[in-house]
Amino acid sequence: MTSVLPCAPSGPQRPRSRQLQIDTYLRIARSLRRISRIMNVLTDEELDRLIPLLTERRFASRQLLFSAGEVPERVFLLLKGRVKLYHTSDNGKEVIIDIAAKGDLVGDVAILEGEEHTIYARALEETVVVAICWDDFFYLVQHSPGLAFTMAEIMARRLSGVQRTLMNLVSKPVSGRLADALLDRVDGDDVRLGLTHEELGQTIGTSRETVTALLSRFVTLGAIEHTDDGYRLVDEELLRKIASGAVAVSPRHPVRGQPTAPKS
Image (cartoon, rainbow, N blue to C red; front, side, top):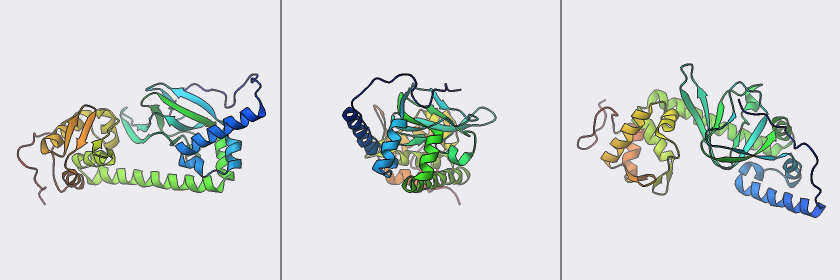
């Protein structure tokens, strides 16, 4: 369980000049608008009301932001770091739903889910956020048409992503799902995993051992190659063929010769 902090700072506040306060708010507002599209849709007046409600929090790697079953306390905007959002199955296995990064909101889904969180949120690395009380955020969504519309778009994209994941789980072999995951993480020529093999397996519904074996097969086939900090994309066309199922790759059998198309 995560520790509960007061939603607003308590105790006496050090006095500050009106101009210093205005300058500080303007600096925070500019920073938030650079980081997050969500903040860009707020009017200056809405942002002025929001900033005094925000509190900065820091989470160590592996620390929980919230757990399934908890009543929503806060919504978090990520300033630094990454957070994995996941379910836990009855047998204790984690299934990663999404990875939130700088500029993303975490905890906002509870608006649609009712009284309790239905997922876990855990920092993957040292993470810095600004937090707003859930009630204040809910009020802001209700009274800001721009924010409400943007939140609807975000929810629709998330739903589309979940539908795609479910479709892949039932229609694609694990090699295709892994190839898809790699293509989603291509940055230039680099493949930025940002996850351990175990966590990557949790995003595509397989084991760490299978991910490790398939990555080795992809390297042997020449689709990707090892680098000091991960992998580099070598043959995008081949990787896309693996993702589509046009080229079959088995995690159980070492690659010999060229890849072959699956039998019809």
